[in-house]
Length: 67
Image 1 (cartoon, one colour):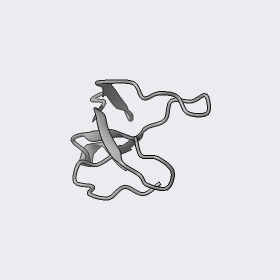
Image 2: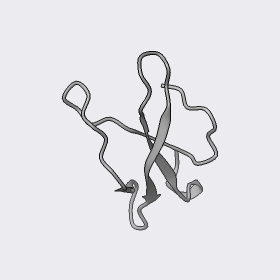
Image 3: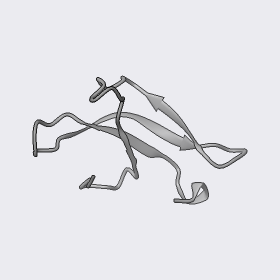
């Protein structure tokens, strides 16, 4: 994914149980202006699972998210 083609990404966390995945938006990410990378702004921090904080970044137009 190239920064110049991306205006923003959404940060999502899986809040579903077991096999059912329910994705909740927890923030956004914007491309950095001066170098490769993203500035991530979270509205909340997901609870750790297995000792790690886990979320995904996807393009806003994504309707279905696969792991």
